[in-house]
Amino acid sequence: MTAVWDTTLASQIRVGTPGYEHCIGRLATSDPVLIAAGAVFETAHGYESAAERRPEFAALLDEFREDVVRETICRVLPMNGLAALVAGRLLARSMPPANSKDKRSKAARRRAWLLDIQIAATCWAAGHDVATENEGDFTQIASALAKLYPDAPPLAVEGRPY
Image (cartoon, rainbow, N blue to C red; front, side):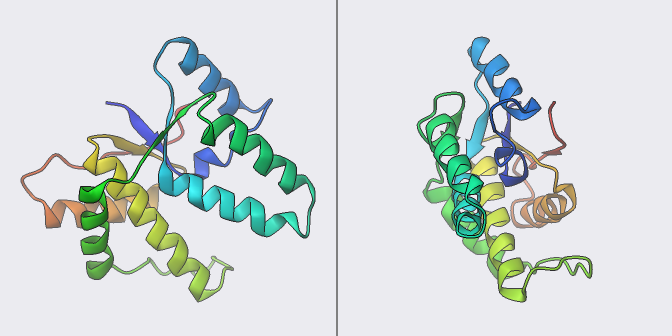
């Protein structure tokens, strides 16, 4: 089954990186990498937020727009109605994991959790697994999904594919 990339992987798609080369290789085999729409949102937010302090992030955002958003080297998996419904149910039933090493504000951690839920729901509703470097959080979401939909196929969580 095809695993859809989350933000931890989508944000690594830059010319000259292993992630970029993996996307190019998959495109050549007519099996393009899928990126969840929520990962595009989160990556764009990160680049835009950093661009004022570090101008190189504005260039990264331009590159990301060309390669990912315009689907030059991969495809974006949109969030459909079922995914939105599932994400809402998951959000009502789950809390972000406590992580004492996470230096982000409480609001930023909650925003990231919401986006992880949206990404997981998008993958699951489309019948795909999720590929991430954030396996702990996505495993927790997959467990919550299994409780909500015990008769449905589970969401598998995979590590980086390259």
